[in-house]
Every structure is written in structure tokens, then in C-alpha cells.
Image 1: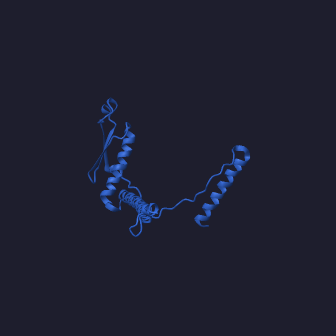
Image 2 (image 1 turned 60 degrees about the vertical axis):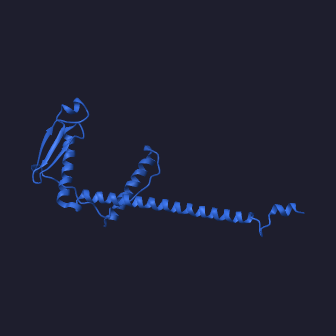
Image 3 (image 1 turned 120 degrees about the vertical axis):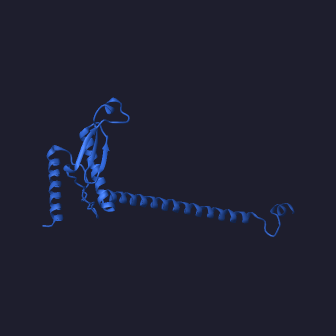
Length: 184
């Protein structure tokens, strides 16, 4: 049995269970949409895992705005990756454990970038963001360029109509229309 067939069977079973629960009086049947899971064309590389033996950490007193709660507590974290010598300091929250977790993620990203360069997870995500932004910018420029071209065409059509109107109002053969009416 293929994975897609199994997925469809499970999905149909869950839909029938929802309908049975709704029809049994537990709730009203509300319309909902079903979407198939989308598969990424190019999955990102896995996140880098660092050994705890390679990392030395210490807790520091906080700094910056926040007053006594920050400046007198050891909530800031400094992690050092021994093999590479990369140092990360983090004071994102007032919690030591959360700051340690955040610093550990940042350190893993930095080590990954140092080792893999443009093939690292962070570099790939950054390149993808840049590409999407460039695409949006290009689409926006194209849209406004088309609007500007349409505006220019409208101006040209209006000036052409005004020229035709103006030529129709001009006297022909040098005789003024006022002279024709009043000369009789």
C-alpha cells in the first residue's frame, strides 16, 4: 500500500469520525476545507546538533535597560564552543534557561555557517528570503510600470482628441466664422 493511499484512508476515516460526532449531537456540522499536505521541493538541511562537552557556559550579570531586575541578576548567558572558539552572549529574557536555549540555537547556527558556508541552513534560508523579496519587488515594479504606461497612453489619447477638437474649431481657408455669420 502506497503512502498516499494510506494517507487518504486515514484522512477519510478522520472525516467520517468528525461527521459521526457532529451528527450524534455533540456539535453542529460546520463546513471545513481539506488541504493535502504540501511537500517542499527542496527541504532545508537538518539543524546542527552540538555536543554539550564541546560547550562551556557561564552566567553573567545583565546589562542595558531594565533596572534592578536585569542588572543585579545573573540571567545573561555566555556560551563558548571550544573547538571553534565562537562566543555567544544572550540576554533575550529574564530566564536563565530560556537564555541558555536561545544562545545554544544561535551558537549552533554560527558553527554551521562557519563549517558549511553557503550550504548551511541559515544561508539557504537567507538566500530564499532574498529571492522572494526580489521577486516581490520585481512584480511590484512591473505592476507600476504597466500602470504608468497605461497612464501615458491615456494622456496621448486625450491630447490627440484635444488636437482633433481644436482643428475642428479652427476656421478653414482663413475665413473667420464670425465674419460669415455677420457679413450678410
